[in-house]
Image 1 (tube, rainbow over the protein chains, first blue to last red):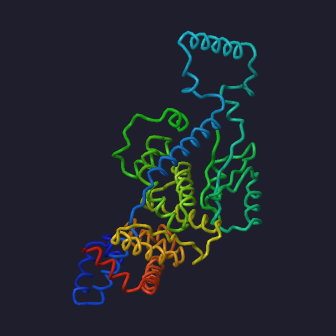
Image 2: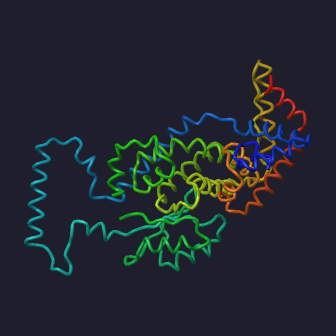
Length: 192
Length: 200
């Protein structure tokens, strides 16, 4: 109990019991002092501000990249920036006319109606997952194959794989199945 | 919705949110909340990962990867543990993986021997700190993790058990093993010097 008495996390009831027992125990007192010294040494902070700033820049860039990958056809903030109101209005009018023409004259029948999001829906989804450390290649390949997935890339330095979901596959459901496996630490769908 | 929030960010203040609130916001794609979480956890994750991997570069990479994993899987956090123990659980597994990748084994770490200073007290303090760092590096990473999570992060043994995904008894045994090993590695002189400096 000494380390958790020293770090202050011990519940109050256990603290009182421990202090009663330690009061008459010289060996315990000496050990408490040793552990306090060790705690002070372990808790020494090292400057990380530069690394933190660098890390956020990297992560932010990664988020931006993933955002673009997820929405290849729409980037509202960038798209609006740098264009004047007149150009926006003209472009909007043109888009509206095109939409009208497509819907009115060129659209497919009810069964195959094309919506503005169809392209995104038809794009292939991917799952990122991280197997447990040390998982054998043949087992990893078996997991990928059993779920009808195709390995796109990986592992990253952190051991993360990116796999392709089959066209009619439910990425969320497959990710859930992967998460249920003891050999997988994390799995989450990405993409549209 | 997540995509939209990712692009636009949010104007909502996240500086006063709890970890649970932050994680829920991150799950919804709130970049401002994620930045706040990053600001709070990056230093702790660096410290932890550095202790396990013995490398600044590797620790930085681990911290980045942990935070990206949090971003990607925050919606899967079910609240059965504290958010911080969930995050450090990810950090533990990634640090061990990184260590494995680096091919590090117990005792194969080059130690920094640069002690250049005219200030005798400073040199002595550095020497003590190096003694402890050196001694910690002699421990298996599983033991270091328990020491670090106890003395740097201030976790209780039950929380450490959640992070390491092991029984509470294993945590206590590892801590006892670490203490005994450190007592062997660190001379009484080091402990007494440390105590003298503390009270100087």
